[in-house]
Image 1: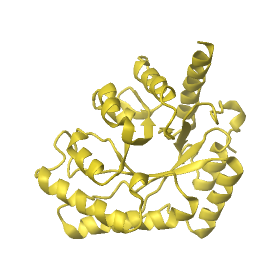
Image 2: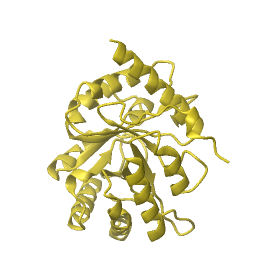
Image 3: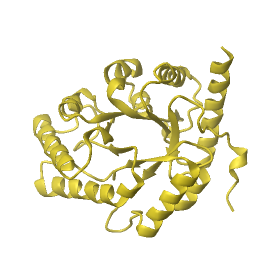
Image 4: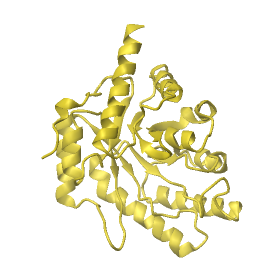
Length: 275
């Protein structure tokens, strides 16, 4: 038996942007998670994966259930495309399989009319230099983007997420192809990138933001960090720019981390309304 939502703060319709969280708050499948979250948030990020061993890609019945929950709960969905893809891989077979996997997820979730698809331009390795040959990697990414767009994905719906390398390495691809940006504030904090500079450069093309904290060196934790300046900056900046529809996803993966994060949002909402 899961804890009822009454113990959690509801953030529905509280801000001039939509508050979301992930579909992995409860240790359960997609439908129980979305049913649990629909009274609390405006958007649910469907974290989908597929491998030879395990897959959580929804079948027709689950998609219909997700659609019913969307309509009843007044929520939207963002879809996080699979993490185990390599759209910049120099091996064309691997790269093309990555594109095919993304297009399969897009087709499965099309009936849900997602607000956005979150895409990782994953590197061949972690760190500041994501590939031994940056030009080759970038060219492969460009081919993958073209194939995704040719496959029917709307350019503005495809949000490329900031990862562990400088986003400048892929910003040209995003801008040339009319893609959107997913500013992952948690990644910026974890890798010590300047949040304000990223907002100046990319907020204009940003439709989705991810926010999560770092606790004891662990990422994707609650946003109640000892130094809350970055969280306050993000919330104030988004509230000051209400003219573009956006989703702010609290990208955590447990009920405890979500509960603490919603408390922080509640505190901020009370503060801004008292000013």
